[in-house]
Each structure stands twice: as structure tokens, then as C-alpha cells.
Length: 343
Image (cartoon, rainbow, N blue to C red):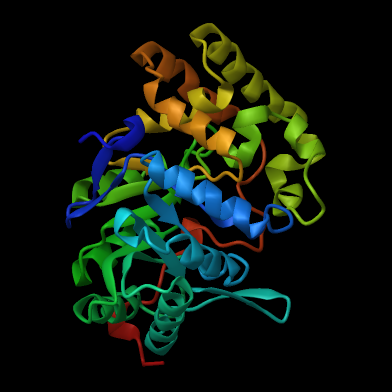
């Protein structure tokens, strides 16, 4: 791990040459899903503070808003584009009250062109398929992304919430640089198959929601402060019958954090950082003090005994990660290329 600005180190993400800050910044909550959009000038200041502090790996998607988060990033990047590793995503759209996932070549190309325009950049550093389109062989999707690499529109290809078999098939068409997945002290389902596959293939791991969507930072009291526009209000783990049970997990984290002289969020984030030097967590925040606190997690050292003690907590979590309307890696298998009859 190379050193970077402000004590935030640098890391190689995957084996294709991408280098990023060891901790990134998830930008979704600035514009979407976690309550009303936050004031643009404040969010631009936050992004600039992050980059000055050495957190240069910025994560967005065209569905955040939709589109408004990319537009925000486009404004924030003026004059600092060269200092940043920019990741965005395509694949999810919301129409007629339902989510749709697409991975067909024409759609990918139109999404990429639109993202480049909104972000006001010539090239996207890391372009993810946000969710897998189960109607189209993954080879077709990656084939089009490979063309975008060859054309210089994107540098590296990523997948998000993809199963191990989908990752293998994708990687055989063009090297996958990173897989983004949910990984935290209360979301560990990717450890069995997906993470070992990424490691075998030399693919970097980007951990989203490393703080359990805020629950591992402040526990059940956070739920009282959620607006009615906040998607978390409707997620299974935040429902009343599960919250009381899950509160015990937070209490255990809080207890250990107190002993170690750090905050619960720093402890939870340090646990993700300790998973390996191929893992980059991207906690999101809309407050500078929280960003500074997240950077502080890099100096929290955990012993093997503490890691093991913390690892037992996830087994006790009640409730699924998402409600039934949101696809995860469990629904990411695509048809075999040999059986595909075309679009």
C-alpha cells in the first residue's frame, strides 16, 4: 500500500493497473434514496474536502437521482478531474413504478455517452454494470463494454452484485477490474463464493454500505431520524420486529469501540479494511465530520482475536439486505451464450 495525501494510502484495485485511495466516497446519499437531496454547494465542498484529504475514489451511478448525482459530480470535478478516480454505473432504470435492469449493447452505449456528458469528462475510470440483466448473456454485455474500453470512453470494467459464475464468464471476455458488493459486519453473504472467486481472478473488491447503511454508526436511534423519503425505512432490517434484535449487534460493536477508544463506525469500517489489501470500502456521507471520522478508521488496528469476536456478530442479523423488489447477486445468472437467439 503506497502512502497518499492526508494519511489516506493508495492501493492497486484489481490487476489491470487501476490505482485508487484505500478508502473511497460513496456519493449516492448526497442526491438520492437517503432522504431529500442535500444542498449542492455543501456537497461540492464535501467532495473537495474528501479529495484534499486523499479520498480520491468517488462512486456514483446514473440511477442516483436519477442523473442528478452525476451532474453534481460533474460540477465538483471542475479543475480537479486529474486528482480523482471516477466510478459510475449503468443498468438500472425506473419506469412505470418498477425497476428495470438492462445490459443490451445499444442501451450500454447510450448510458455511457449520457454519463460522460453529465459528468463532463472524456473518460470514466471505472464503469460498472450496476445490476446484471438476466435476459442477456453476460458475454454480450461485457463485449460492448470491451468496445468502450477500446474506444477510450472507459478505462476499466466493473460488476456489481454479480454471482461467482457470472463474474467468471464476464472475466473470460475482458478482465474485470472490480466487483462492488455489500460487505460489512452485518452483510457477509459474499464471503462464501464471490470474494474467493474475485481473489482467484485478481479482481479488486469494492465494499459498499460498509457501515450497514448507517446502523453500525449509531444503532437503532438512526431510524427515528429517517425521513419518509428514505428508502431504508422500508428495508427488512430496519423494520420494528428486526430492529430490536439487531440493536444487540450494535451494542457489541459499541462496547468494543469504547474499549479501543474509537467510535462504533470506525470499528466497523476498520473491520472491512482488515479484510485484505484488495478491499476498498466506499462509505457514503453528507457531513465533513463523518468523512473525517471515516478516515480515522484507517488508524484503528484490530487483533486476530478482535476480528474473530466481531465476525460472530453477522450470524445474528435478522432481516434480508433488501426487500423483494431489489435484485442482488442471487438473481444474477444470465442465459448461456450458446443458447442465445439475439436481442
